[in-house]
Image 1 (cartoon, rainbow, N blue to C red):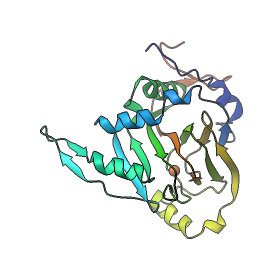
Image 2: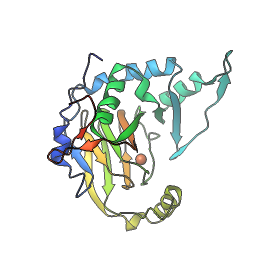
Image 3: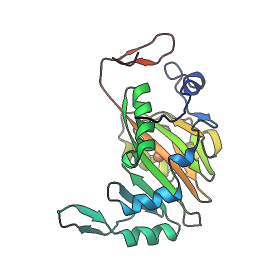
Image 4: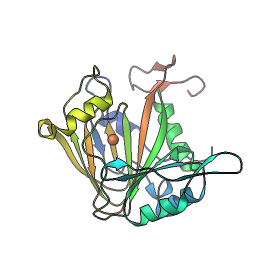
Length: 241
Ligand SMILES: [Fe+2]
């Protein structure tokens, strides 16, 4: 591929202590030219192609989206419903956004070259209104890299560590009724180009108040034999060094 993201991954290795003190990390200006990866024009493109999959959030929950069947028997989401929901200011999440174009593919490729994971991008966005709420504080099962791309958005991250003896859904149900037991350790106003790294099961919440787009990249552990360089903690993959 003839592009690269321009990311200096050393900024993440230097600021995070991934092996010995895994914590949430905020790095300003991490992703150069974030508009190459997510913009309102790209959202419109995604609406007109059928390779990504949409979710709409209302009242902090996913709502059902009407679907149609194509002549080839494939499922296709109702574009008019999606457009109306976006224009009304509801938060949307585009799954499989990693395959959207050469930039999003390259971003995922670089993460997979740096770490032992597979990735997918969820593009979160909203036009901004009192309807543009996201989720309440919750955990996700795997590490997430949030690349903020448009507008500003406040995030709160909590220090509480929650046992893997309970499933994610059970944990999130308990959190919902015990928000006062959460201790914030990081409050940031993400700006375009900023990175927020969330270790697995780190409780977090976003408070979008204006039009915003962010690439939330879920990282799923991969089993392989790649060795880590003991000085830099970078992964040495066959044929890349
Ligand atoms: Fe989340």
